[in-house]
Length: 358
Image 1: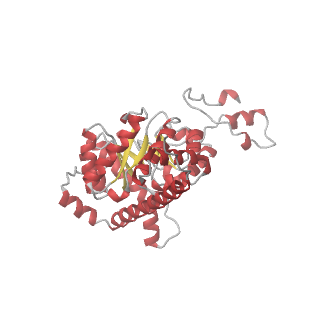
Image 2 (image 1 turned 30 degrees about the vertical axis):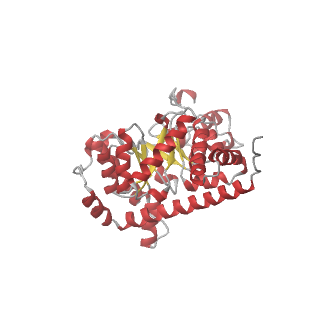
Image 3 (image 1 turned 90 degrees about the vertical axis):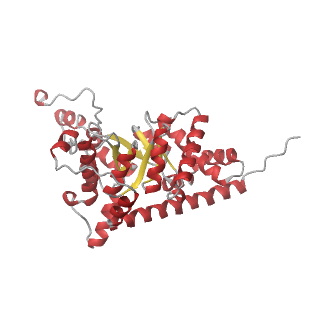
């Protein structure tokens, strides 16, 4: 039996699933089970895995390459008693300025996360600046400045901006200054094409929210993976980027089920929520690569699109799903940011007064 086992890859970190060993299994069966690679480990051979969470403990547990945050994730984390000290530290640092406290809070969480990942953390600019090029640029520079005061260089930070025309313009300027950007709330080919031309570091096309929209409009309970419009969108964007040699990386995001993740194995990066990381880690099995630069070259090539503002807005407007989901996403992030602000204000009011010197 041992001679028939495949030789494991020396670089692979196989997990031992002792709980999967049945009571009747003999030594040989137990060896086979213990050497099984989880789907998560197999996935990591094709794509960089990023944790999509503000939960520092979850990041420490899963040890991803990078991590991403957003206002919704920070709101959940800030309400957790485990991280109350970070919130209080941010409030004290801001000295009563709510906007400064929000920036400080995002950076404090980002700095803690960076202690547990070898790569980068994404920190999001206020959603209310989604249609303000100058405001987004200034906020990005402030966030980078706060990180630098903590001894963290810009090479470890990705500034998250909504993929609006205004923020894509902001990202173009920031990238030239050495500030790397992650364009989020990306639902359409128009957004992806404009981001590539702007030279942004990374885009986060949303799979799950595209899936949600089509499921609702088709009035169905589910859409098969082979027909999943979110998976199809990311695949198209990935192939377009690789065909035309863009340096911008593609990070699939916003997943609803593990099948969507596995269908995009080979995408540059995949940002995954802790519950789905848990499921992938618990499932033994190899994951075949679905996306690759070589495969992109043999796919149907899409003509390069150089969009000015007029053509961008028209092409984006033609995509009802993208128009709906971008607007909804900005509103949702703004709503959670306002809730976070209220939490910060209430905690600041409850904090003991600092005595005046002398």
